[in-house]
Image (cartoon, rainbow, N blue to C red; front, top):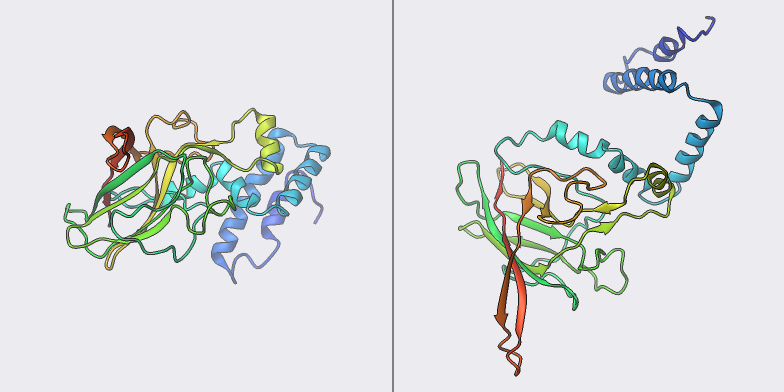
Length: 278
């Protein structure tokens, strides 16, 4: 077969068993080839540009989590979430991200999840409910977040292990509550090839402030999501395109610290967010 500009795409698609061994793989492959070839034609890709693309992917593959971050930064990760978020009236799902750790320590209701002398105290509470608004008992609420400097414990050796991580279990009333600190937005790692491309495109590297949750309960569909903090300066331009409707407002409070002889006032925040499981 003589390859031409007109037949090369179909030749690549036809090169194989036509999906007999792996139908789903072939469905993805066939569509990917068709779209990639159409893209190359649309932008009239040059050999030099192709080589730059090869170099980018080669370098990205040698950086930890860089490919994962790439799919986040071009919206593919969130697009897949949106395609398969079938929760309906249940709380929306969202990306797990690379900072989740299995077997976080079990906490009691109301426990403080971490140590951060510079952080502003935040009390988070709410209910875990079913689709009819009834409380769910024995639901596991798995929480993780960065500290007030925007750093997770995995990124910061000065933090103790499992700082701002914990697993809580609801009782018959479905209530959960814990103390943490107000999270701040943070820059994604930008020292690798993905960061270089963002700079060339004039894109910022900020993630809006958020807290991660994974919830599970017997008889219910597990939920992974993120709750964003209202008022964050990047709430409308999160660099991974993850902000949807799960946004929590913080209420500011002033109280007298009874442990201080001076009776000084301390500031803390509260927020309430209910989760609905399917």
